[in-house]
Image (cartoon, rainbow, N blue to C red):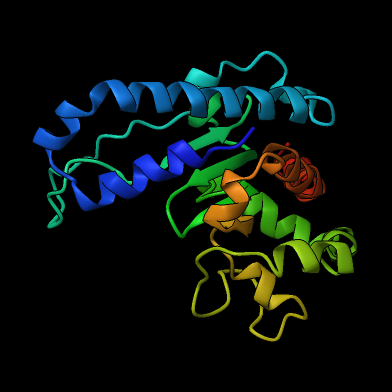
Length: 218
């Protein structure tokens, strides 16, 4: 499954981010959205083989709207210039772990984890890191993980979270407010026929990271 037409459409949208242009090209957009939904369906089916929590998830419930919420933004361009989907047990409304695919010219990525977990979930994740750091290190301190994702990403506190000493041996991990991992893809890689297979490999590698987080919050 190559997605060059989708990438090309998003490039044009980024140059013509206005309602008039979008209305003229709405039929093309709807066709590309169907293509993206097809990609998400294939990913869900593949991920469900190693993460049964995604079994039967509707791809339409995973894909984000292309319209931007501009009510409180200085940037009044009406449309996002990407296609994005959060694949969790409740689609994009999932509060637990999930997998994410994001297509945008020059900024394509696939990954997993948790973005801004709820306060009680965040507290449980930090507690799990404190109690069982070896379990997390067994996932992230490997050549397989580092060569794919580099390191955990997400906003961090500037100091130690409440209840933890500043000299905690795993303070850098405890300071995270989000926990996710990403693998970047070039536009050419997204357009290539093997992209969906590569994306599934990335999701499978992220699954062990998700498993640690899921065990922590459950």
